[in-house]
Length: 240
Image 1 (cartoon, one colour):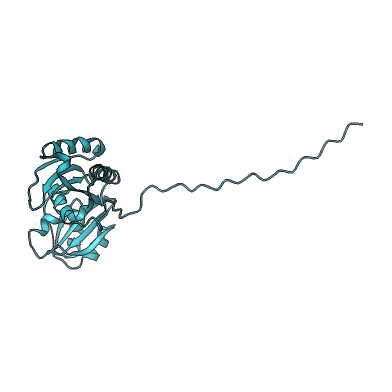
Image 2: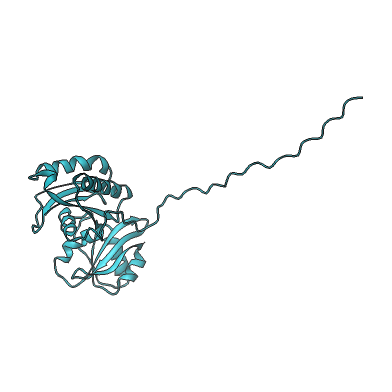
């Protein structure tokens, strides 16, 4: 089975096609970018699919990163994955951005806890922790660096992702052993594809994973009420 994997969750736009059992994609492309995901994604997918024998008809599944990540980026990638899956009658699956970032480290087969953290700004991170064998240790959550370290235990910690320096500094301040490994701030698209092949479509829908409430809140608007009737002024007496 061939899978098309798509990632627009973080500062990159990526797609690849991977055949089940392989580790190297048949075709792939990644563009690093902070903005412009919507404009870049579909042309990038077209370029990738042009290199695949059989094109879209050769695909058996579509995978897409579902977060955490950029609100707009997630919507762009998920919408594209759903549209392709619908058009070609394919199953679509969602892949955690944090799991995709952790996967290469898990394959290194080291016993230390693996922590993946994404900078969520204003001193906060999205993070998750995994055992060295890949089992989930701490479910994805949104918190500040201090709360994250308190939730991670005694270490030693292997840290990755754009939020890794924040976690490391906080861990070191508490005397915990922590090491920043790798410099990726967006997932390797090949690992998104590999996780997508392992996912169960019935339990991994292509649906956004939002870990914090939106920053924008609706304005409080007072309910409209009819104006109270004003008493009529007394009629003037006619002049004598």
